[in-house]
Length: 587
Image 1 (cartoon, rainbow, N blue to C red):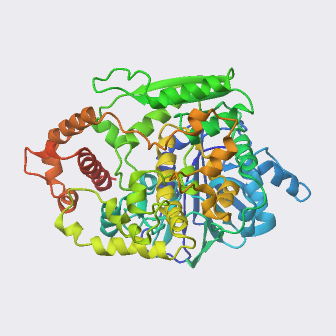
Image 2: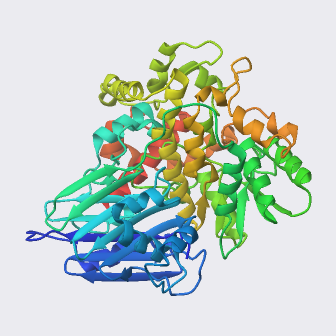
Image 3: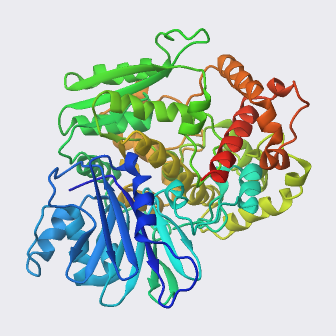
């Protein structure tokens, strides 16, 4: 059973004193994840260990794969998909009799046979907790690129974990205070340049980093291991990109429910849609924004290029277009509020609406084109990339020194700005520690920071709509291919163009108009209408904004009655921070 799910649990340490999490606490945490798994719930407890699971069924729609699942001395709660579970099952058939057709049971038996080394054999996106009753050891594990989330709080008495921070906060032993250092860093450098993968914006709440296994013994002893890293560049021989990417798309189409694909008309989404079409009929979803008057925008760039691809692919593409509004309501701000992160991008409202469009079509799974820009040099033609990281046409290693401050939020308080130098140094020191040429190091930085943030909000927003997002460009064999070759393989310096290898791979499969389309960022709503909407919202709640102590300490708010004068990004950030802090205080 492939399933995008929600997991929660706790381990109470031996001889623990003071308040400890209970089975009832874990039940409340699990209930808070119902949107991640509306198709089923399971709970399990044994001698201070409590597991909870919510299920969104994708493959294997029966109950034989219900979780938590126990086989012999091992019990697991698991969120994700193993795309190679059938191959692993064949390797394990001589050792075990399988009671279900699920990837969950395959993962459990793989761990039983190979121990922690089993994770090296897994291909997919996953986060899971596994209890070994014989060794009395809890293992928390996250996939290589961090597509599936896992958060935890460790005290002297217990460790508590969940797929979302909001669920963790249902446990009374978890603290409810902002991590001011983390918040200041993300305001000064943006949430896309957080170099500490363990850090969230809630004090005492940690994120399990990508490609990490955390081992917690029943006496509280804890250790962590990084089981995978990006490869260093070698030669340009071996397998070509197209077979790897084709296989990635093909495996991610496996489901017992219909699978769709986002189609913006850009290179990445077009490549995925075209490769999906090779395996059969495909549903493609394109989203545009209303014009400044709220009317249908007509045929804009995304619609024009997506329609060109649909015509190129011919019959077999069921193409749906949706028009999203520009206005933002307080309910919209709350809907995209992830307690793990500072929401500094108003476009998350529209990304959530994209997933809502998929749900409205009666679909459960969508292929998403995220990841190609960070792994294949997609930003090298963008003016802000050239200004603040590296101009491949005229390399200058000093340009990158401007990167952290270039992403700073506006309108920050003097207290926050005092930390400018330290925040910059954190990012630049981490960048210097990475291997490769200047432009390669910049993209390794983006994988560690920006891509980590992207998959975090994509999973969160998709799951808000009970939709599973899959990312073919983040299949780890594809990512390894991208960095195992000289990064120049992705670049063309004379035209300042990236994703050259991808364009070459898709030549003949996509129309030239799509292949040669300049890189475009995820679009904003119409800015005039958006500014009016946010300004009115901020004005309606101006007393609350001024009264919130966190907002007042982080931002230099204008005088009362003048808040509408703030620019769009500042209006959004002030409103989002206020709503985040309010939720934290009342969790």
